[in-house]
Length: 112
Length: 109
Image 1: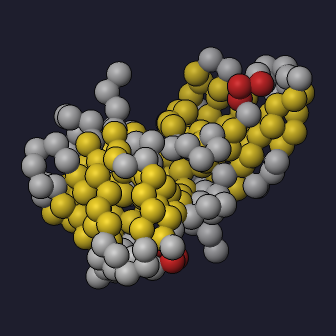
Image 2 (image 1 turned 90 degrees about the vertical axis):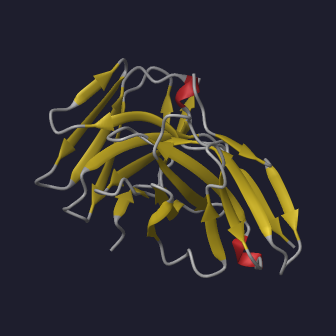
Image 3 (image 1 turned 120 degrees about the vertical axis):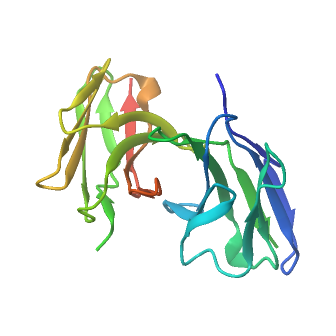
């Protein structure tokens, strides 16, 4: 069964450092997303990406965040200068047209 | 007001019990609805989509009431493996998903 894969599974970084979280969406999907979940809280939408551009972003997705699809398979989330409050589980998801979204297993980001 | 609201639980039920979860959503423009299941520290996994006509998948039945902006999930004959957090989710026209905070279910032997 096709699946969304994310790397790394766990990333520890120092405050102020840049991190790149990587995702390989399901191959025939067209819509890509990043969500985050702070420990004990709900899953929150960050950004959606379609046709090589951002289609929507939330208030959380400020100038410190960026997304990229550098090639035909990868979809990345970059946080330029991490803060302690960026510590969370980051989930990548993908969907086709009028199909449900499937999530990767997540990257746990710990900012120290 | 929260966009998607759920009772956090926990619901603690014996094996074999029937349990029902409810959820309300505030955005009347929401176009799609889902129940996802999330195990501790894992990713959300799609359980089922929810339609106005109601849909059933084995022991699970989901129902949508657009007039009341209300979504339900019924689990019959609960199994120990059903223990998880159940996330009520709405989607808009851009396929963005809005998650509720989840309802925790504990099924005891």
